[in-house]
Length: 197
Image (cartoon, rainbow, N blue to C red; front, side, top):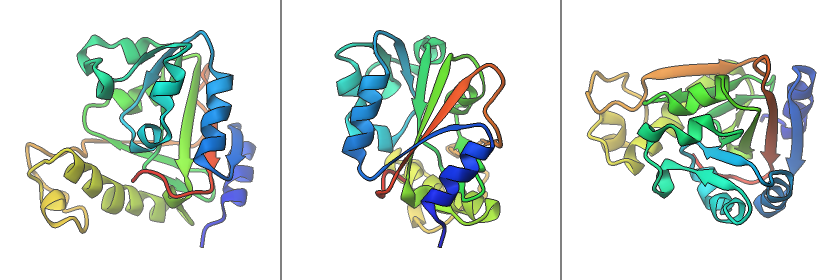
């Protein structure tokens, strides 16, 4: 079984800033204090939703999230000073894996912000890169497809990726972070609870 503390050490050795919390409440409190008076963009994330971060950060920041009324097409979230998202898979070695359909979320993890926060529950952790990629494709993607009510085999059957040719496919691009991107400070918030997909 993969170890969250080892993942934290490996992420640090790759140049990521890392914080480890026992609960989502402690992590949310930390983020609420750390981000103040900024423009903040949110990537689509059940983890962030379940932590109540939009509500708390909106009281003292300008927050943009297409799940809360800001359409993706406006680009406000992508222009923000700070960007928050979760991940679809994380290897114990520190490989950060994300799959996206529109590209807005993974693009924001790669470029354009002063600071990136990636919030990761322990259920996203896998022992190896291959297992983290498998998790992203066969656990996170089908659950997200079901949440979005797509007409794809993974949403209908809910069991795995079928590498389908459906026009409703939400898995269109893959991004892997091995190190923080140049010019963008990246902090990984690890939480010892199951969060999101």
